[in-house]
Length: 468
Image 1: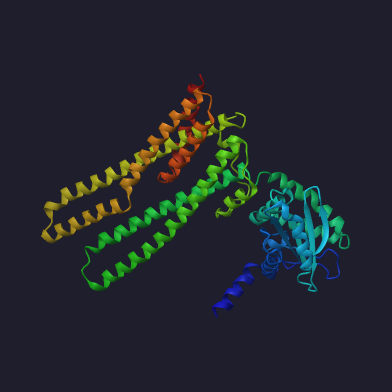
Image 2: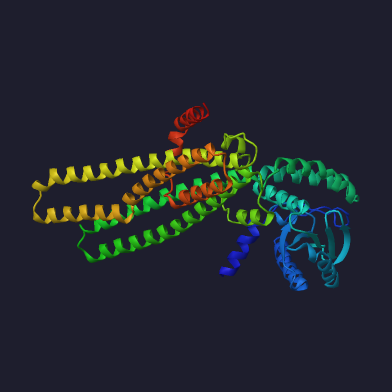
């Protein structure tokens, strides 16, 4: 029963436009088939068995990898070898495994292998064999991800493919050439898709999601504390069990959201570290490292939303130690202010809670009988347990300590600037900044929104004073 429901849901999820060209056409297009993903997994195993001890990465690319999208009934697999010395051996073992070598490009060390199937639903498999840091392979992944993330782009590309298939049903070369300008345009737009702008966009998206989940976690802690406080007024057994069950469910939800919050923050922190190095030193990370970082991103970017390097950093210095130091200095300045504002807000909130609780107890205690006084005392104790269990007090101190640590980093940055940006100092400064930010509490939601304009003015004044 459950298996049938899952299969039905998968068929609905993968259902695409009911379009299909004539079966005898050279250029055949059809709606997405869920079995293409299964075929990729099967061929992945075949390729890895054939390659044996030759390490590689295998990615499903091409239109068949994009759900709800028309494609030729061919599965494209990008095989990225980890070592250039394995290129010739990989070709030989793949040919021995039944793949046909259709093309070999010596300039970029790239090979194209195929295997045909006698199946109209899937005519065959294409293997694109590339070496590490291959632009060809990188562009295939960039284009695939762009289609997967942008529905409007998929619709535009799909219309173009259907039009070209209608115009050139028997001319594969013309069909491919007709897509060239569109693909080139998207690749130009996505230049640096594994670079600084895209990393910044993911950083903002992951950290924003982390802040929202942090707020949800705090709200759940308030709810759990409220249930605990209310339970002191309940003496009947059944309602107490109901409250216990509610607390258990809330705690389980809290654990799940807290884990997701930490995952999003970890992904955002990894993006931040990468951005500082790539933008500051002008030395992009290796393709393998960038892909591993991108694997941790789970927030889907909104179409058309991109954080530009020029808008995020004010430094216009040439890539190098000075630019890296200026990035750390600017980031530390903004983060210090936001951490300080978060600490101030929590101090005010704690003082308000204690004041309201104390005032309420002082006003009502003389008017209550002994049993009511006991209940009130229990509620006040539950309130203080909440303050400690949610670590609001600890978070307030954490925000304050982070602001003080970042202030010291700003002082060290100014000292490094005065001494000509010595490399060991700048690298240590960058590491200490990252460690401070990652060890500090999450900046409270909406703090940046309310302080953005004020902090922008303060930062410009700070820069003007520093440069004068």
